[in-house]
Length: 252
Image (cartoon, rainbow, N blue to C red; front, side):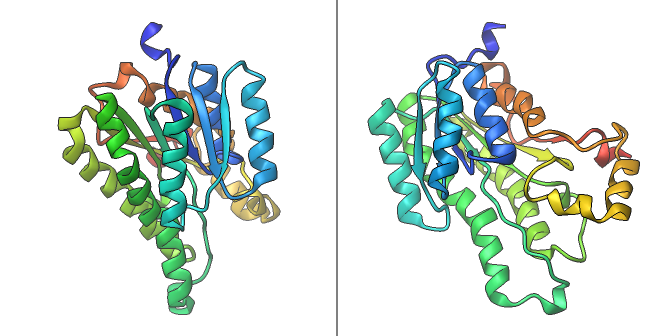
């Protein structure tokens, strides 16, 4: 099991103060990593940091809006100063905006693409020098089932997550020479604030459960095992992969 031990590693998790990001941040800490929570809400950041510190690991809570390039760069530099480097980046921060395509305005489209796709590129590019300095690095991007399937109501979200899958492949090819592995987790329907409203629509909620072979929504921490694997030396020969964690939804 030593191959899965993350002791001595430093991980940045964007949007790590809630939902899937928090579940992954806690899993990385339980595997031994020190964690940086990079998210916008300082109160939620402090809560997540406290929980991680209770596990006996260092945690730095940094207020960071991934839509702002200077805040991305500042987060990476602050992490390097405090921890001496960076080993793992989890690009989790994301938003969804619902509208049929004919009613989707340019501002909303650009907002979603910026947060869900452009920031993934910018954060990945920002950690690259730190990874080269270490001689290794792991990037874990968070995609979506909508990267696989189309959607009539979250068009920008679907397009952005499809872009994340392709960006994952391109960065994996480009940076393999630097011993950097870049992979993507594709969560299925997970119980988070983003999906909370679905349970208020009984027919849609039941449709999802009926389609999912596991017969339920997943929990945020159930994405943690995949993240620990992809962040560990056990996955050193795994790169450019998009791994569904969805209870079988994508194959049903």
